[in-house]
Structures are given as structure tokens and as C-alpha cells.
Amino acid sequence: MKYTTASALLLQATTALAGPIIEARQQPRAVFTRVATQTGQGCEGSFIFYDDANQIATVTYPNYGVTLPSGPREESCTTTLQVSFPVGQCTAGTALGTTTGTVYLPSNGITAFFTARDYAIQPTIGTITDVSPNGQWTGARSAEPYVLRDSISYRLTPPNPQNSLVNFTVFGDLSLQPENAGGGSLTAEQFVFDIRNQSACKFDFDHGVVKKRQ
Image 1 (cartoon, rainbow, N blue to C red):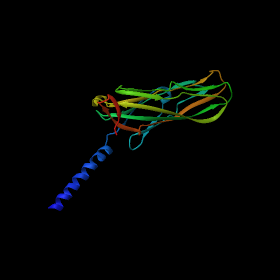
Image 2 (cartoon, rainbow, N blue to C red):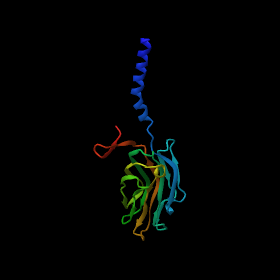
Image 3 (cartoon, one colour):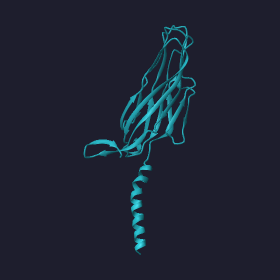
Image 4 (cartoon, rainbow, N blue to C red):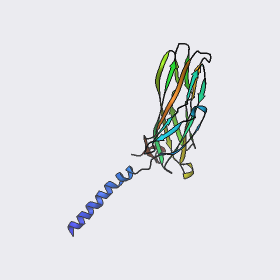
């Protein structure tokens, strides 16, 4: 009997220690719903691929570009990716956006712009801060690839299922100046949105601040 009692106590202690670890590993995470919308001529023909965990979305743009002298000289594309967040849980993270393309400026005096690069969320169930630099290139450049890297920090708490589906929207506008330039091109070929860097947070009632779960 003593042996059985000791074994039972040991099992209870082991379960108690392992409980929080198992709970932390099973913490719900934000994932892409695979629902997306796009507007703008630059989005035509684009397609989206998601990884198996639904935490990386890769958007490929076959027709997002501007060209001189034949045109178009300006083009835009707005992409919205829907993310499902755990209801009633504060989720904090930093999403990473990476845009790649090619710029070709055959002579000096021509400038290529990738402007209006910004992010927005709907509904606004928390805060979002994005660092999304514009791109600007001057001639001469011979079909050079470029990379623009964004950082989108957020802290969101859906109060109910109706507000748990959050739309992340990224904007962008391509242009070449001056319009009477002899030639040049700028393309945006791929956009990757990575939301893997996230964790649950909790409310500290003693200090009235939100902090990450320890």
C-alpha cells in the first residue's frame, strides 16, 4: 500500500508539473483563413499560395508593373488577407512583409517609385504599427532585382467570434517619372506575408498594462 500511495503521489506531481507545459504548447494561434480580396489593375491574374500551417501567404503578381514609353506609367494593387484570431485572447506579434521585383532604368533622368506602401486592419480590435518603406530608384539600372522588407507589429484581442476575422490590407502604387522618358520599367512580382512570430499575452490587472504571457 505504501508503494502504491507513493506511486500515485509521484504521478500526481508529474502531471501537475507537466500540465502548464502542455497548455502552453496548445495555445491557439492566429492563422490565415485562405480568404483574400484584391483590387487594382496590378492585381489582375495574381494567385496566392499558403503553407500547410496557414501562417505564410505568398502572393504572386504576373501583371503588376509599369513601363515606358508604351505604358502603363502608373499602376496600383491592394491585397487583403484574412486572419483568424483566437476569441477572447490577446495575441501580440510582428508580421513580416517582403516584396520582390525588378527595376530597369536604361538611362539617367528616369526615376521609378513604389509608393503608398501602407498596412491597415479591419475591424480595429487592437493596435497595429507598420514600418513599410517606399521604394525609389534612379537610372541607370540594368534589370536589377530589389527587396522591400516590412515589419507590422500588432496587439489584438477579439471580444467575440464576429470580430475574430481580421483583414490585413497592404497598399502599393508603382510609377515612372517623367512620363515622357524614353524607356524603363518597374515590377512587383511577389509579396510574402509571414505571421509566425506571435504569442499570447495577458492583462496585468495590478498595473493596468498588457504584457506577453510568461
